[in-house]
Length: 478
Image 1 (cartoon, rainbow, N blue to C red):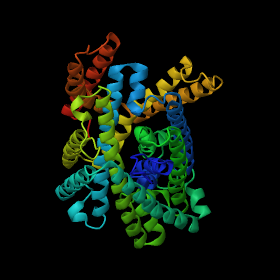
Image 2 (cartoon, rainbow, N blue to C red):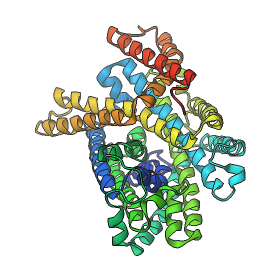
Image 3 (cartoon, rainbow, N blue to C red):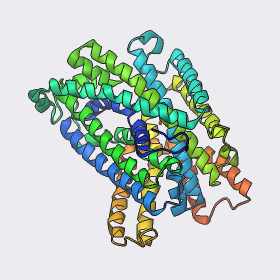
């Protein structure tokens, strides 16, 4: 629990931030998304890849927290330390933007969950009524957070405990009704499902595995609030292990209770539909209530993280200093205002999206990949340089291997995501650079780009031009 008198977070509170950030919307959609893509065999391979890659990334975060204890701004600060000002900005902006898109996804999921019971009003979560309800919720949370970050963290800790209960109940129900014959039938793909290669099956699950692991860096983002610096790395690993166990169970166990085609066909949130196939309608109601509690709690955590990233980037002069302002409750108010204005605009835009649910999920995943890649890359550079390893030189080789695996994993995720989402992220990066980065550099009277950074910006502009052309001509749809 947060020690509000000192304004610092204990290890359990930091771990709750990690778990609260990770156990949000994604875990409740794993059965349907995986069943659409693959059977248990492909799912096991996908989780082995994702679990290994994300564990290595978690270890990189842990190593950086220990070796560079002077860096307390979190994700983007590592990118800046390793690759310069513009890459630091892109990491900060990408991470903030991904967090905003993730918050939009949460409101779409709330709408689609309510749509299970009021289909004509809420539909798939992108109807006019759903958007109005979302906007009311966004601004209600906004004013609550303005009252104080420690209060909000206490609420997050309580909600984290509350939302684990429906997941545990669902897992126990799946275990009780486990049917080995059904699991065997589904194992290599099941019946009435289109034929796909194993590689295609695994690739189609990769973006949701990135999405459900988002938040693994939650303790790193809040490192300046930690009572002890060593707690940051410990909380990251504890949160990772606990949540990975839950996610694998929620993915694999439904395959032993119903045909794969039936699981793939249920509405979102698919865990509700999967449990309904097993225990009846009360299961869907129970999980849907859990989804609403879980998503609102995760939304709270991510609203805090969004504002904190923008605030920290402004403090280190990577964003305009306007966003470094705090109110009397130590909340980065201007950063929070910009965040919720952007989230509101994206929520309104879902009205014109053909599949707002999966589009926002996939966009959120891809925007997180660049910050993760740069963190892993900095892990490699730091281990090679030996900085921070003076007392433990033998650990350099191990940490370098871990960081290289994390780099390879994030590059593989970019390939799995596909060119469409990479181009769409570039479309968002260019105006962000022109508005926020140029503004910040002008404030500091600093040189805008080095030669290498100008090349990076040029490539980003080219990718954005291709993405914008694709949107205008309809070759890229959302």
